[in-house]
Image (cartoon, rainbow, N blue to C red; front, side):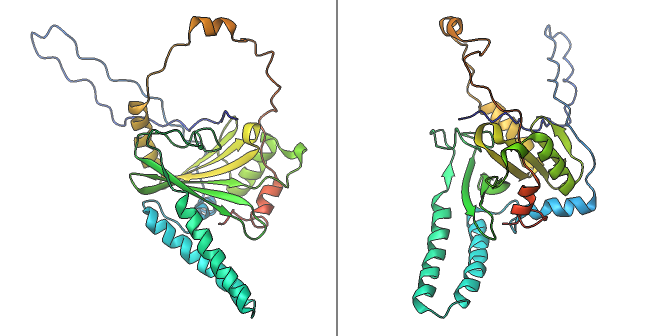
Amino acid sequence: MRRFSSRFVLVSLVLGLAAAPAVAKGDAKRAPAPAKTAPQRKGPPVSAENKKKLAELYGGFKFGMSKDEVLGVLKKQLDQKYEEKIKATTDVRAQDTLRAEKKTELARVSSSYIAFDGKRTGWDVSIIEEEFAHNTGESMFERWENSSGKNQRRFFFFHEGKLWKMLVSLDVSIIPEDKKNFETFQGVMQGQYGPGDVEPGLITWRTDEFHVRAVDKLKIYDALALVIEDPRVKQSLIALREAKAPPKHETSPVIKSVIDTDKSDKPDVKSNGNAVDAVIKAQGGGGTPKP
């Protein structure tokens, strides 16, 4: 399974690097020059109208919320969802069943919480594999959002216990195979949210408050994802992940000698694929996906 080909949008690891301090007289060694950082991509400006559409991806949640606060919002959403169903029937047994379903759904979300503390998890090779790192104070839980014809999944990412990112995996089961390509995906996404910064398999919209990524994961996971994140937290996390990353090991010459360098024995992989008008329709008939 793997490999999530879409890369993170590059941001500077350190802002405002000053010149290296002057060397004291008599010091035989020169101070090292400051490290160079990659310039931050900006892309087209986001209009006020499109910013409002993109902000709907918050789904009622706010960056900085704790796990309990997120669960509290989820509980209110479930209360509202099930209240309508309970009122729609006078069957007492059916009402009790619905109340039990609501309780089970919230418990399942809470029990999905996981801290990325170095132990390998089932998420290390998955649709979210490049959205977190270990031993950096990161954690996550997820929820299936199956309502109004949608079958999508929302992942909540925390750093030091505070919500900083959400990833919504969209339902692409109704999309015809011949529509699963990046060109269609790009047209639909930019038609919905306006011009973005386009890279292979990735479209990014940037505002001061948040960044949104539309990510093509069809090649490996047959999935499309929308990610909304706090750029300030992301910037500090990238630096922390770099500092905490384990050293890379050189591949053994013996192993190198038997690797098929031309990849002739590998199966063909479909060209970058992604979404379609059906994605938008599946999320609410032409509007922004809502939880």
